[in-house]
Amino acid sequence: MDPMDIVGKSKEDASLPKATMTKIIKEMLPPDVRVARDAQDLLIECCVEFINLVSSEANDVCNKEDKRTIAPEHVLKALQVLGFGEYIEEVYAAYEQHKYETMQDTQRSVKWNSGAQMTEEEAAAEQQRMFAEARARMNGGVSVPQPEHPETDQRSPQS
Image (tube, rainbow, N blue to C red; front, top):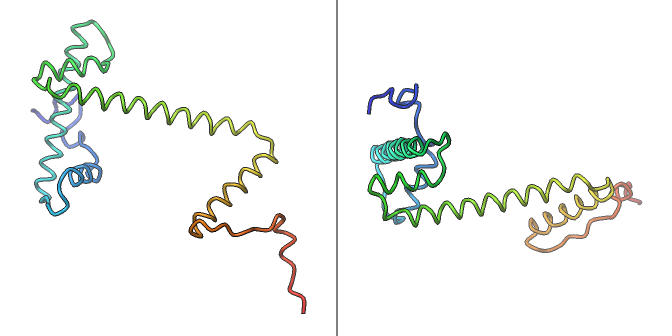
């Protein structure tokens, strides 16, 4: 592949996060196996090339259907055309899992943002509840009672 094959970018510009890729590589191997840095770099380059190959083929599939946006179906068809049909079920399952997790994150975000509807008193009470939970976790699950009104507890000691 020519360095300028990637839409106006040099080959050096198209890469994947090295730390993330190294973590993925290590997670896939037994703990006693070490991977040379050159081998890690080669694997990362292979991943970039694979992504370029699948993206290009998905774009061709998309264009043949007179579409302007590559959809998941185009990627799956590209995998089939490129001879990776045996992975389609696994890729589709990963895609479905991603959609599910994204939906869950969206629902959590909506739930969290709906908290903006709280009154100031409700927000303060919720904050105190969250502080208490955090204290309990820090103390190994043992709840340490905190005064209701901390400002009244700052008296000077009596002799």
